[in-house]
Image (cartoon, rainbow, N blue to C red; front, side, top):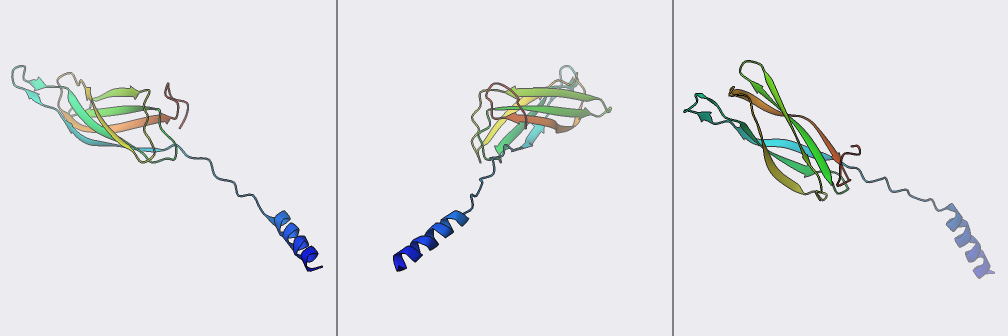
Amino acid sequence: MKKLALLFVVLLLAGCATTVKTPPKKIDAGFRITNWNQPYREGSKDWNDVEIHYEIRNTGGVTIGYYKILFEVTCEDGSKYYESIEKKYQSLYTGEVKSDYTSINTGGKKAVSAEIGNWWISTSKTGYEGK
């Protein structure tokens, strides 16, 4: 009788067990400019391209296969110059950081700031499918 009562309790408790759903892994990243510079050209008396060094950190729970960044440079006269870079076929794993650089031509004007205007990421290695 004790075995039957124990079996009844075990079956009763097993029926009360709940299923815990694991939340889907999120894609996310952090971007930052680590340095930018713009040398002055003495010979032509104007400013060279702005060289922007940046890094991307995978702060999500899935591997990033693609990213695109829009950079914005503002010059002394208020004019703005934009450049976007696209990196396909990447494998940026969770927690990993990659560094790179790009250049933006300002038509010989002096830059006063460089910023990341926007960015896009995807788990796909062939292009943007959504953030």
